[in-house]
Amino acid sequence: MNEQNIMQDLLNLEKGACTLYLHGTVESATPEVQQSFRTALNESLGMQSSIYAEMSAKG
Image (cartoon, helix red, strand yellow):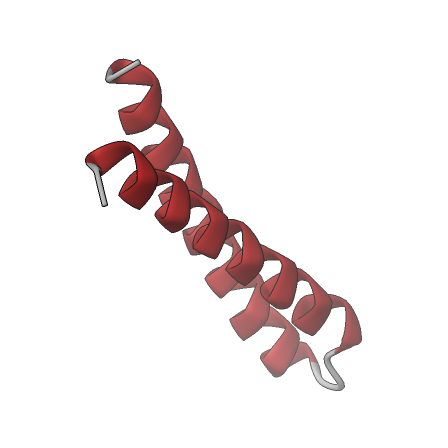
């Protein structure tokens, strides 16, 4: 597996995590749980952005 495939897999995993965190945020029963999911979503979005930036820099 080459670096391009690994980065694409990482990006796809982060996108999947974002989807799960978004659903958790929307469907959470308490404000505390919602905040936890929202924090995790924001962190995951940041990681997704970093992965994409790295991919873009390498072409």
